[in-house]
Length: 236
Image 1: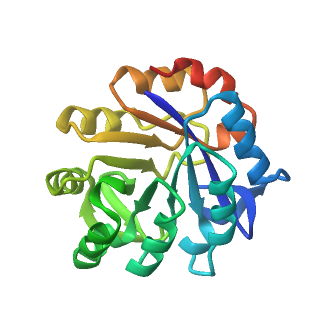
Image 2: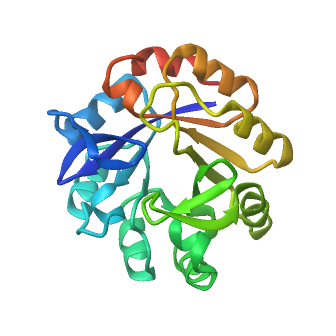
C-alpha cells in the first residue's frame, strides 16, 4: 500500500472542497511547488493533483502543473477536466499518469481515442460515486451507470488502476466507505486508489487491511489531522 497526498488547484492556489462544492472551499496559503518539494524530501513517491478549474470548465492550471512536475522527481497523476484528446496528450507530456473520469463514463469512443494516444497503462479511471451510482461533470450529474458494472468493464478493457471517490465522504473526515471498498476489492483484481473521508491512521490501516493498493490523503493532511511523515510509515 502506498500513500498518495493530494492537492486540489483552484485559481492557481491549493484548496480543499467539501463534497466537491466550490462554495465550501478552504484555501491554503502555501505554495504548491514548495509543498511538493517538501513531500519529496520526506520520502513521498507519488502525488495526486486535481485541476478544479478544468473540472468546472473555467480554464485550467496547466502551466502550474507543468511547473510542479519540473520541480520534483515524484510520480505525478493529474485529473480534472481532461475531456479531449489534445489536452490529454498535452498534460500527459508532463506527468506520469492521467486520471480520466467523465469522458471514460460518458463517451467510450473518445475515451478509447485518448487511450490510444496516451497509452492504456498511463490511464487511471476516476469513478466518483454516491451509493452505487457514478456521478460525472464535477459530481453534478448522475451517469445512470452502476459502479460495480463500470469497474468490471474497465478491468476487462485493460485499465490497471481505478480511483474510487466516495462523494458523500469527501472532505468530511468521517472515515472511508469501507463497505464499497471491500466489495470492489473482493470482486476484482484491479488496483484501487481509495479517496474520501480518511481522517486517521486507523482509517488508513483499515483500508490497507482489505488489500487496497493506494490511499489518497487530502483534507486530513492539509488540516494537519494526519502528518505525511506518519502516514508513509504504513507503506508496504
